[in-house]
Each structure stands twice: as C-alpha cells, then as structure tokens.
Image (cartoon, rainbow, N blue to C red; front, side):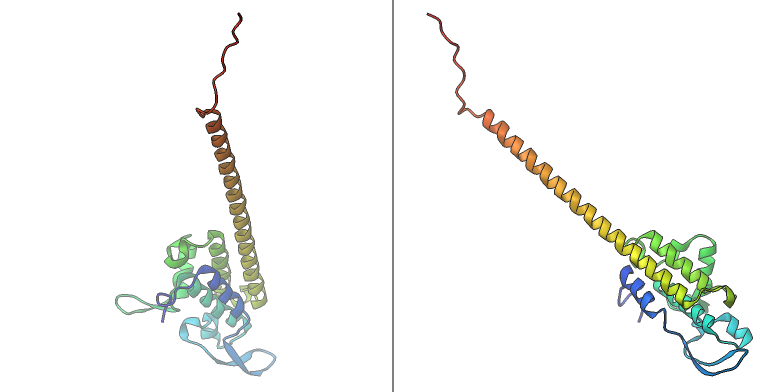
Amino acid sequence: MGYEEFPLPWEMRLQIAAETADIGTSRSLSVDQTHLTTNLQGTFGYLDPEYLWSSRYTDKSDVYSFGVVLVELLTGQKAILTNESQEPKNLAAHFVLFMEENRIFDIVDAQIKEHCPKEDVIGVANIAMRCLNLKGKKRPTMKQVTSELERIIQLSQNNEEAESITAEVISARDDASTSITCSSFQVDQALSSSDVEPLVPFKTW
C-alpha cells in the first residue's frame, strides 16, 4: 500500500523520520578488527552500493538505507520504481539526479508540496542527499542525521507558533477596529437623529 491509500501530512512524515533515525537495517553476526559481517535485513532498493562491491556492511551502510527512507517520505514513492515498461528503477538514483539538476520540487510528493514550508523540504532533501553519498566515509553519522532532523522539526514548530500568535494579534486588532468603527457609527447616528431639536435664534424685542 502506498501514500495514496494513507495520505500523510508533512509534520507526520518529519516525525516518522526523526523517530526511526536510530533504527538500523542490519544485525551484527561477528566483528573483527577490519570489518563488520552482517546478515542484511532489507530489500535491494535500500542496499548501500558500497556494500555491493566491497561486501562490507557498516554503520554508514545503515545511513545510506535511511537516506532512501527519507527520499520515500519526501516523494511518496517506493524504493524501487517501475515505469510503463515495468523496468525497475532505483528511487535513490532518480532523486539524486533531480537534486543535481536543482529540481527537487519536481519530485516532491504532490500531497505535501503545497502544504509544507519549502525550507523544511530543502533541509530534509539535503540530509537525504548526504546520506546517499556513494562514499560511506563522506556520509553523516545517524546521530548527526537525528540531530539535524530534530532541529528542522523544532524550527518548524517555532514558525507555526509564531504564525499562530501573529494571526491572533491581527484578529484581535481587526475586532477592535470593527468595534471602534461601529461605536463611531452609532455616535454619528445619534447626532444626526431627528430627535435633536434645532437651535432657535434668540429674538430681541
């Protein structure tokens, strides 16, 4: 099932990303001084390309896999895409191409494109891009990823609170302005009422 059946708002996608950032996709079987041997838990679309040519799965391989998860949350698409000819296509490679061409909003899920801050999307997309670096050593740690995601969430929440307060102030100001206008109108009406007796000039005899 895809995002079409269960639409997810942007805030929920950010929360999912932050809460799953410490969960790895591998289970260690043995460790020696040179590398980590693992039993992979995942599918081809999430596998670190570096693992495919080195057969070494490390914590930075988990970072790559998480980068794919971030791209899924951003695009609403699955790790392996299929086109009209049913040829499988790697979502991560597709995403990197769009990022390099500065076309991130051409691949972002339409469900969230119009309803989320652009700076948040760009921030998450940049994190995903760093996670998907083909060289594991250049990828961030999961701790760094978690920290950056939490910072984006915090900034987003602060912005929402500021916008809410601004909206309340504007509403209160408009209400006060309307009240003053109504009062002025009532005073004007009272002064122009026919009940007010005209002044009679003083007669001298």
